[in-house]
Amino acid sequence: MIHFMIQFGRLKKMTRKYLNDRWCARCGRLTPTPYLVKNQKLFPENGVVLDIGCGNGRNANHLRLLGYSVDPIDMVDQPYSMQIVLGHDDLPQRKYDIILANYILMFLDENERSKVMYEILDRAKENAILMIEMYPAKDAHDYDFDEIVKFFLDRGWSKLRKSKDKCVLKFAV
Ligand SMILES: C[S@@+](CC[C@H](N)C(=O)[O-])C[C@H]1O[C@@H](n2cnc3c(N)ncnc32)[C@H](O)[C@@H]1O
Image (cartoon, rainbow, N blue to C red; front, side, top):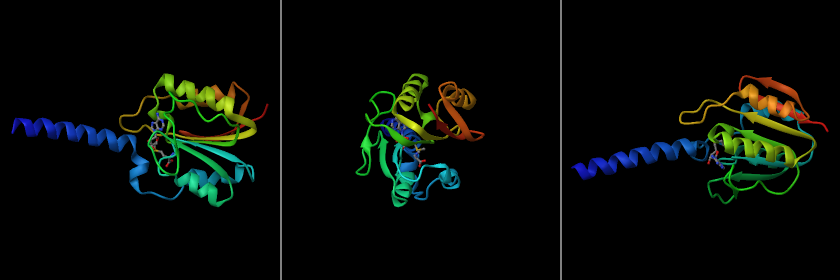
């Protein structure tokens, strides 16, 4: 009985973490985020897209259907994405026209997030668009969204759209 309870406790903990970490890969929601659909008119017409923490690929697939070339990356090994652990592995050594960070940055701790933010600066082409969406997910790390936006504004990016926890920024050198 005790053995069973320990095993069950472990399983419950593992399952909750598994679900939190991989929410989108498992939630079955295949439509792109409404914020992306609403703001895709701000994207350049053609271009190469980096989708960091792509989950089930719903945003990557949507943009592919619109004709974009997309590099989706996630720590979870999926046939449709590159396996990269953000904050530990490097982002692909390419330059991008559009970088998506939808519902991912809050899952990174301060060091991981900082590394990824500097990498985004490095991988952005002139006039690149960066979309960020965040929310205070359970078990996610704390964040100050205004500080994150300011990081980019201080480094040559401008604000095209910003609301609570969501923004579209443009990089003009
Ligand atoms: C809430 S989902 C967002 C998925 C997608 N961007 C979307 O909007 O549907 C978060 C994703 O981030 C991934 N993730 C979390 N931490 C990560 C890390 N350190 N490196 C790479 N991917 C990570 C998870 O595997 C999960 O697929």
